[in-house]
Length: 453
View 1 (cartoon, rainbow, N blue to C red):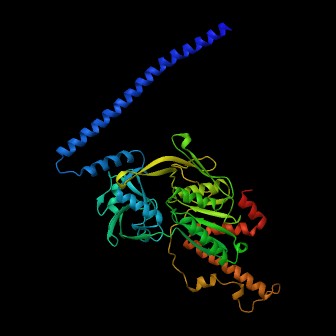
View 2: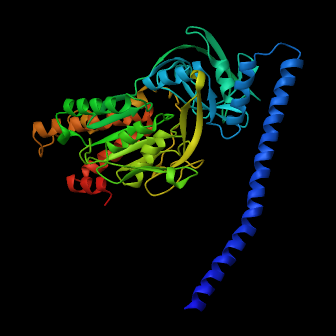
View 3: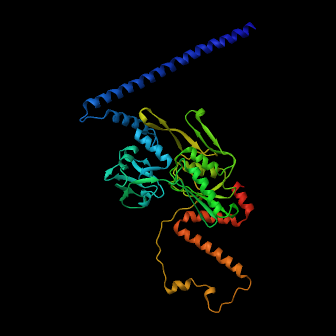
């Protein structure tokens, strides 16, 4: 017994000696690290004083410090940054859905400003700015070398004033100028309409109004169609939606899921991770869903598309999304400013990160460029459009009643209207065709498709 105790004691003592031997260098390294940090801070203070005393012109000390802070944050990633008191106030207004500006969501890539997406119905959208465009100059001044916030500041101005941006676009040989008149941007978070028996839910942004707008619009469209039994499915259009608030994306995803994970976030400390799950209740009542995405679908849009795709609740159609898989936390600072800091990555229910990869659609459908086809109304064209029904003395159809013939003609008119939509919006028409195909297979198949079976 004594031997065991001694052996145990010897082990403890040996452990104590080992701990001391290992801890000593670690403590020294930590002390050296802190000393180095303090030396760097002293260096910063020294440079600041020299600029203030010796720079060729008088400097604004507050602006100098703000620029240093912003430089520190923007060196981390394109989405972190410093917000002045005015910028922070503007951001709070934007989440409520009304603000002044051009109506574009931008990021920075290779030193230039890249358009994530123009917002529907805004001056930038009306002027023809497209997702993926690079802005190289603002009113003739190059943005190369500027931070994203500095470039955005160049684009700001009073409502009603003109701005000229120089744009570089893929597949366009030369840069070109776009004139835009600044305006008050009033975002309608969700626009709803029906095309035949399909309800279209166009979500333009994720703010405080998105879910209430979605819920009210969906119910109104279903009521106008005479009830859910007359609806063949829903299209959730997230194209060119630059994202927005994480809680809003979670609520929209939850609106179409009965259970399961929607999204998880993971920061540097595993204990800071969050997991968000769906609650019971499906606004679409099990009807099939098609989600439309493209290269302008980012952030919160990708959360919704990824969640519905992973749960096999929706078919995702279009082109690869933007690939912003990080979460920013806005932290208030003294003086009314704020710090926008990337604090986590988010993951879809299957555990995949879409950072820099994007959400891949289940069915890739490119949007063809709009081509104005000349209408050929000559006699030969008219002849090509003739059918048996146009021939004089044709036989009548003796197997169908008048009501059946009228129904066939009505169905044909619907199909022709859908075909016309392909000229206007090919991707949307494709999504509607998918839902029509599912509906044609019968209610049992639709239910299985909605559940992912």
